Image (tube, rainbow, N blue to C red; front, side, top):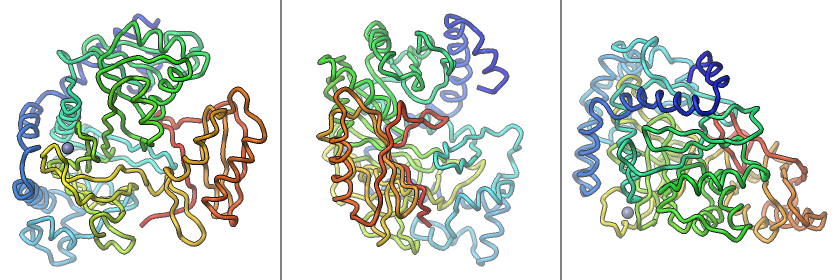
Length: 468
Ligand SMILES: [Zn+2]
């Protein structure tokens, strides 16, 4: 919502805010589910069963279209290709992509206008921001088809979880970054309703121990079939239920936008008595990966983009090896992103999924470069490794790990009942065992942890510059 509308919205009583949220969703409906949405939905239903060869054929056809368009309409690509003496026909398959340079965030910032197609106007084209949790937000433009295939992807992820999105779909409770409840509100309701989409939208910004009983009571009343949220917000709800010895059975939980740790998945699945389906969609709309009911990894949605996994020298890594995800959109012509370097790292899996789909499997995107710790000797420590020393310490309510420099890691803790200095010592020892003695670990006791403006929470934040 734009700022003036948001100000007006904030002054309305909650009942009228529910109507405003619903009215706004009519507009969103047209934007998301109009135009070619049905066509994309039908394509994705079919293409999920394509074999490798069919997927490749589809990718190459789309790539050729994007490259031809970019050369004709996007000044940046015309320049880049002319400088290299490349013709449109030289980039015919994904194997030719290496002939083009990678596209970094810096290039997008400095050449923004040159990356926009001459058929689109900056004043009217849809724009999106990546959350920029490390203080470097990035803006990217999208065309209507891009928005619609994105929702078709999400729609397919919901179908894989045996649920339906939208007007005639299932009742869904959403706990993500929607700022639908004014931040200074200190009494329930901490949720709003979108009657059109049968959605209950819960605020991620009011989740305190005092407010949790009201959240859970309202969830029980709404009785959703599905819960969709960030791993961290889902985990807060699940842990509260677990501590009370209660469950709130659902049909499925969908999680995305943050790394989902094993301990979070376990507690969420236990408290909501169903499976978690984790999906990953880069905000730059170049990459979408979703989990099927076999839960053997994330399927890379090959119809959406071409994904490369590269090392620091921009050479492809072998299957099974971790690399930086570099991806090419197969749909966005408003601002074609070709070989865009994400902050995310993952590895392709060698095995095929037992569901029979041809879409390749990828490991969890658990090692975002900015979410891992870097040691002086260059080792990168994945957050999953760091979860272990916390496991026996049930007196810690919440925690966050911040690497300030190569020499210093700060651990912020929200203590719970029975917390003592002994636990701090155990934690420091446990972390030191994993990180080595060359790095200081400082504990800070705090009342609450901060979320970013988008409501996302990062358990591990590294301020040590990394990446390519
Ligand atoms: Zn599968």
